[in-house]
Image (cartoon, rainbow over all chains, first blue to last red; front, side, top):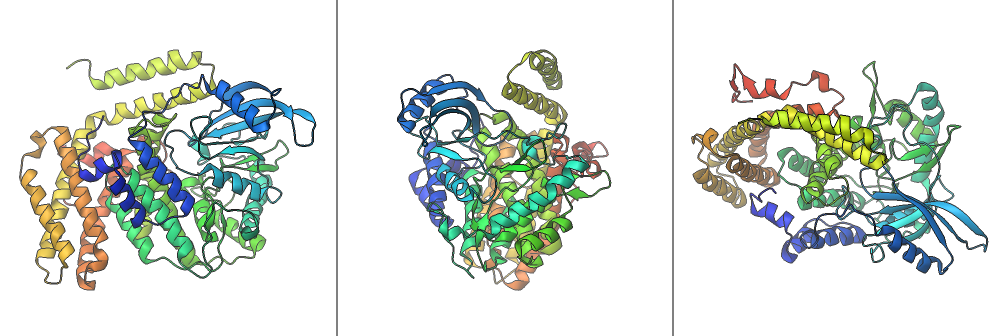
Length: 403
Length: 188
């Protein structure tokens, strides 16, 4: 195992209470994000490497489901681990039980569970509340149960309905859906829906959606952007396995060029190919992975979704946003659908922010999780640092151009 | 020393790809085995360059920190916190002297020294708002080519992982590290 090299690296590997408190003070974030990030640090030196053996999962899950449904005659079958994804451990299973209507029926469900440390440390209560808020607005899986404390299975989790559909088209498989290729017919059928759903998300009145685990930023205020940047700055300083001058410089630029958010909206936070699913007749039937959602500036989603590193390079040298349409077409359609006007200055700010976030996740947290052997995907976490350094390079070129 | 590391790695990669993977039935296990094989292939390409990568960074960080300290020492307006950081640089250069034959040091010593220097440079970067406009402009001018060289080096280092959409235009790490058969320590 690697040596600590400096006191800062030792603090990150073995965080003490005083150091954790100083990090919390230095980088203010939303209350529930502070909760999970602090828990991650407190557990870091207490927990061993992540256990990839899930032989006792079936017994524990069955016991939990009996308790959650209040029914002793439930039937649980076909528990399988899912491949794909880069964050949570995911399993499917069939459950037969008496639903609220009284009818006894079977349903295929998905269990989405945190590893010991993840490439993104997020809150299952936030994710389940956001999925509930989106129910009936845009296509999402229905959440049945959530355990944000992780008391029942050893790790926090949520259980939702499993939707049949395609995430990665045949031959379009890439790590976590990045740079996915859709053939032209599929592209034509999906692109309008892809934009419309994002526009819908941004126009929902989030204040009436029971999002109690989300802090509400003020309008015409810096607060939303301060929390967004504070989140990723904090994660960088908690997880980085080496200091990085470009990342440090980018954080400073983001602090010095921050603007107010006129009207905060629901931001998905990871809206791209790999995070939506479609049916055989080419209808998007699920928007997935809401764990990075928060209330903020709609430009944040637009920049992230259109950032080149997440796009699909084409033979003619162009890059398609999520493999579906050009950046300009995406932005034009978005403005038509949402009624929001894109501000180029804010878009550039969030272009920098998006690459900063990609770098924090893929350079710092993925390496940190693999360093401590804290996930079920340690090999992939090391490999993803390659994605992070490609992002850091793009970040530097962007700062060079506009800084 | 035999077998060479590259031989170990290519043997493991072949075994994973041709023996283990075809006999795995679980999709998650197949996916993870594929990632292990890809990682072994990447390690085969870069393993003999890791020491020189760190050695080059050692030279570059010593040079940039020397330049920054010189700039600050010639400035009357440097605030106290920045002066403190320059003192830390001086202190570190006692442990890893600028003119030392660092190439004779163990890998871990170089790696550790580089990390200290990276943290010190990041301190200077954080302190930019405390600098006068003139000092900050001079500091930024020093940093600009340095940032560029980090960017190019890191991108070349991970080129073979396949995430870079413009990888073909990017130099291989060996072409970037060496010039005329020696480590390329030219100033960026």
